[in-house]
Amino acid sequence: MGETSVRLELVETSDRLEYLPYLVMADESESVVKEYIAEGQMFAIVGDSGSVIGVALFVEESKGVIELKNIALDPQFRRLGLGKQVINQAFEIFREQGLRKMMVGTANSSIANLAFYQKAGFRMVEIRKDFFSKYPEPIFEDGIQAVDMVMFERVLDESCSCS
Image 1 (cartoon, rainbow, N blue to C red):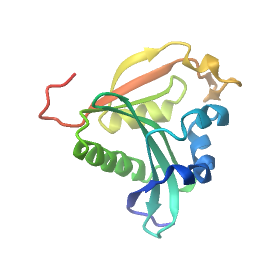
Image 2 (image 1 turned 90 degrees about the horizontal axis):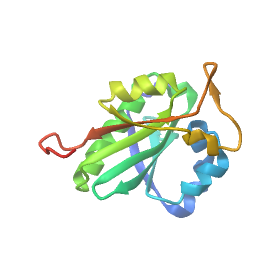
Image 3 (image 1 turned 90 degrees about the vertical axis):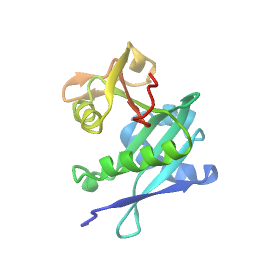
């Protein structure tokens, strides 16, 4: 239980379905997850003990821009600063790959995520209205229905004046 650090290990496309239980923790629609599970780069989040405690999936959004499509930690490992370590390691990986910016979106109802991404250095840039209306079942968090997607971004290379 006493995980203090994590490392990211690339997951082969052929092995990704094994991580579906983690992915649906963060994106409640299994059918929506299956639409993007084979895209981009997926990393298993491995704790000090050597066991997988979560997953993160990143998809290239446009030239030089990577989107954090899904990140999930086993509930017992949340609120320990591990998610922020994952984000920071991902910044390094994608900076080294020459990407300029990372984006992430979360539901208007995901209060904890809205705070988490801002603490991790992301800034709000866009609202995608009615994004969650295509989901087969309505999603509620903290008594709020997920309707809109709030988009955040963070520049990976601070020396770059990219916008």
